[in-house]
Image (cartoon, rainbow, N blue to C red):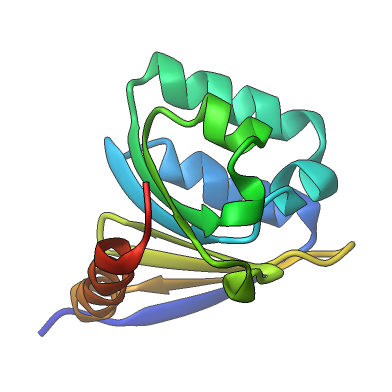
Length: 136
């Protein structure tokens, strides 16, 4: 039986390690806050987006309608859909490989990295349900 693991990351440096891990895989699913990544991690945001594009990492991104004209939408390599403004959140969720990263965007961000095929599959299912109701 596959081992399930959870790790807590505190601080900007450690949150960057989560994003560096995401870059090892060809696709990811993301839903959550808009603008907080760049606001909290500054220049790392642009570096990350540039590397994702160079590596042709495909992203399916779910955001609030409020983010429709934001930089994250312009820089994302992949597909983007939007939800009503009620879904604004200070939390981002990234699903990739057999991992789920949940990041709470505060001045000193906290991330939870869950590892395990079952948990990743569950979050993919949640994402797919929301993706179907979101608007292009």
